[in-house]
Image (tube, rainbow, N blue to C red; front, side, top):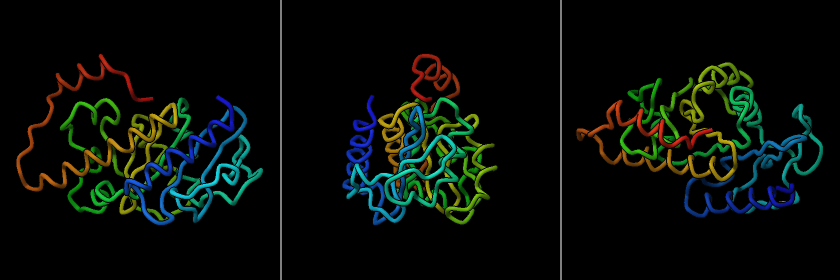
Length: 212
């Protein structure tokens, strides 16, 4: 896939996420790993109004090459890539329900999403939550690197979700799955949920290997 195609795909998927309310204002950021560097959404940019030519271009070491100034959230993106060598894209959103889960005091930090649907299991698996750190701070690195080794998706405490995958499309779809699952959990409230059993989870993971 050419870099031009990847740039256009970032713009297309970002606009789709923004238009459907998965992130608001200038929140959220996306990166794609290239063979010779990275493409990253610019700082303070709105995902609904990106320009393919203005995306930040970084080299393999994360040094700025061209385009607008990159998002300040580079540390969390690079932490995900370091923890998940097969990842080719990272999506970070401030989607409402997933962010709400990251703010609730009783959210399980080892698995923020209960296994209530097969697609949540296949595309996400258990989603750990890491402690809050200031946005853009390098202090997030050890937390994400430890949590993401075994998990393609992570919740940032009081902040929102970060999802990686081996393609931009998969990362976006998994991000949407995370938000929709979080929405179901919030809507369920105090009602008893019928969770998928471990046998069902093992069967899904054996039959469908959709995660990177």
